[in-house]
Amino acid sequence: MSAPARTIIQARNVSKSYGALTAVNSLSFDVREASCVGLLGPNGAGKTTMLKMVYAKSLRDPAPGSSLSVFGHDPGADELSVKVKSGVVPQEDNLDEELDVWQNLWVYGKLYGMPRTAARARIPELLAFMELGDKRAVKIKELSGGMKRRLIIARALLNNPRLLILDEPTTGLDPQVRHLIWNKLRQLKRDGLTILLTTHYMEEASSLCDSVIIMHGGVKVMEGAPRHLVETRIERFVLEVQGSDIPALTGPADAGVRVERAPESVRFFSRKTEPLHAISARLGGGLHHLRETNLEDLFLQATGTSLDE
Image (cartoon, rainbow, N blue to C red; front, side, top):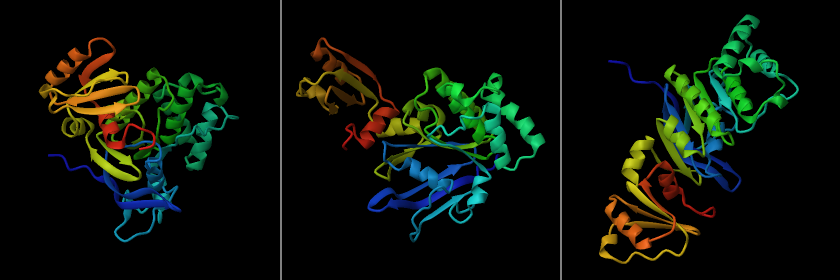
């Protein structure tokens, strides 16, 4: 029988405020070794702020009962012990555009204090792993967005970290590059790397994460395995209807159907398909689609469908 996975990150009642704004409010969660945990939420939910506290770029508010441990260290008190075991992929592409691909990694190897022989061996491995082996002498300004993103991930892996922290790693990338990065992250996790990420892509969270934490206004709304959350926290089926002039539900067959209205669409949710088929038949023409619900439906239910909610 294998030993239980160790806890790499343990957060208890962690908060962070900027003046009158509470960015993170009493957030608690664990991240186990060789797992992937995703922080989900709309802009301003507190995801990036929480990441920055994990790798000591920001300090949590001191409060009774609040604690944050990464590899057994408090990032605020022992920053170096956390950073030496972690790799960070920020939201922004912050490569040095005056240098080429190899030079960008070589400079970071020096910052990590890597011996020259170790860096010369590690850099080609990472370029090959991220499918950038033929780009080693190319200047950064000549790379595509997807290549830059893959290089930043390679840079974060340079010191063989035990924890990889990614802030929206695939935003703005085309589907092919996104899936390539997902495959690489899955392989890293199989090899024992622990991953903490934020994302706005629910497909990404469902594909990569063992557990997700949905945040809203700095507060944890729900937490769990993506599939389990969808199976237990929202109806199984949804009928999506395009347009705003949709009749109200009135018949007895509509019992148990939940309605979410947006300016240009309406969604009908039910645990069974029969009521939704009946509604579809009454609608006649127009665009409507019956499908199983997914993590994005649950996310919108938990955080709201309007930008001002």
